[in-house]
Image (cartoon, rainbow, N blue to C red; front, side, top):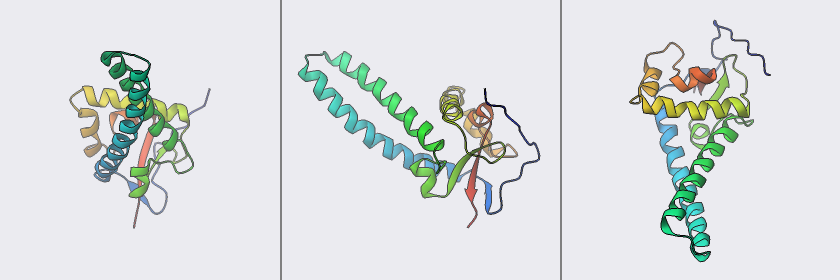
Amino acid sequence: MEEIHQDRTFQPPAGYIYASGWRILAAVIDFIILFFISFLIGLVFGVVLSILGSEQETIELYSNIVGGVVGWLYFALMESSEKQATLGKAAIGIKVTDMNGQRISFLRATGRHFGKILSTIILLIGYVMILFTKRKQGLHDMIAGCLVLKERK
């Protein structure tokens, strides 16, 4: 099991600040990208299932499952990659790190992704927290032990 050393005095590396409002723009870009990816995959998946004789409800169920898996893999794989960012985050110079400023694992990125469900179902309070916490962390960031940093221009 990965040992976690959280430096409570951690300051962002030179050239970075804690990301806050910029995260909204990154989320919009990622939403647009995921919408088109999911739409295309769902379309292909739906056509194949229709050809196989599946009913509409079954097609919708499997399309939703595939969409959820695509979203999870998009965020978890990209945020745990060398870039440490989704396409939306990379476009505006944001990256996800652990509490020590290091690259996160796929498992931690997965926890962060699914932590967003909790941030959402409590009336988005988990996201609003970003505006009020010292390190601009949402609930899902705190759960996963992550920071989101923005390149200072």
